[in-house]
View 1: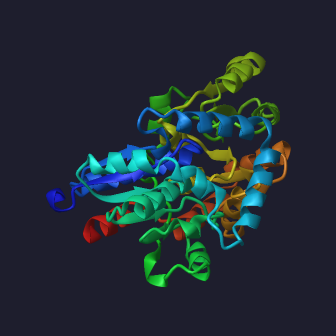
View 2 (view 1 turned 135 degrees about the vertical axis):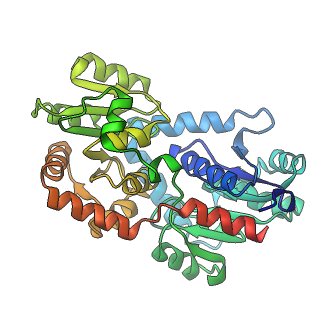
Length: 371
């Protein structure tokens, strides 16, 4: 592929949900393999604006301290979504269209790919206010349609499943503009090392059982409760990825000491997954897809409902995860998967059946080929 024919690709992400950034990095890897330069930016943080950073901080605080509020806001969004009016989200993101248009105009971009709703809404505004003619693609990173996705007016939508593609079509998007590619994951998940190699690299004992607990980028959920339940099995090594929640990491260290390895935000999540025997996580679209790409036995424990309900429904109904109602049930389910070769292998087989680990390549090839 001659990148001079398509220019660089601008990938627009956002700070509310680390999965969007992970999907963006997966796409940069795929474009690089095609010889196409790409760049990631947050449209709410251009031109010296700190709006993206403040919004990210507020979002993380809400998930940690008031997940019920997030559920309520999401429900209001779904109700508003039924009205034939531009959404408040579009109204917010439209304010950043000028900075984004200037940024696009200053670069040699051949296409724009968005992995976050706010980025999609901002890109719609750039087109409507400034007439930007660059091809614009939307990558959806959950397993059910989210409110306002259909109003973003992308040229092409890439969805996780045929079901979510069908949802967009029912909302009025032409079928030839919607492709069910799967959710893009980085190479470190689809090309994992052997378990012993991963444990050696992380300084974990090569033998024994390792339980991985992930709290999302915001570091939310009753992680201490999960660790207390895991402590019922002294032979179990428990590793917790606390995301950007430094307070959670310190709290775990104070309560459990060396009995729990608490790890702050890391780019090595794929290596920790490769080292583990089972994972307990909230049902984020990206983290769930990454775990399935690693082929790791998976237990979902919901922190909030909203968009994650569709994720856990999709995975658990297809046998790619076990849905747990509380911390004890989650740990018991993880231990059962670890200790049953038949159950864990069956789950891995279903993950291989339903998850496309090459989604990033499929998306990048279509964007590069069309630009």
